[in-house]
Length: 57
Image (tube, rainbow, N blue to C red; front, side, top):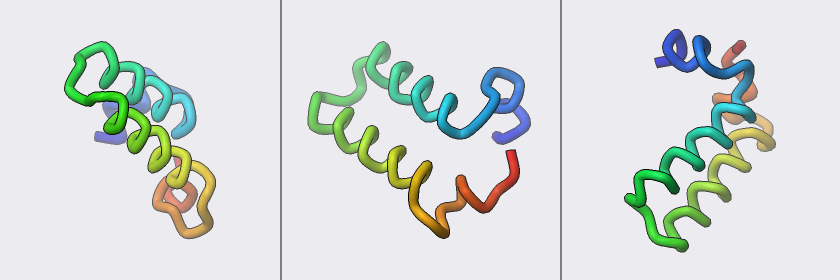
């Protein structure tokens, strides 16, 4: 997946915003689901030990 993602995004932060935007456009999640996605993407971007902080882009 990372090879595919790297074609379209420059970093994990950019990817997470596009991911959430795409989920909103598809409409698979209600507002609670979207809120949870934003929360956990934020954790992946900011928390020490996160795979997104340990896997080189």
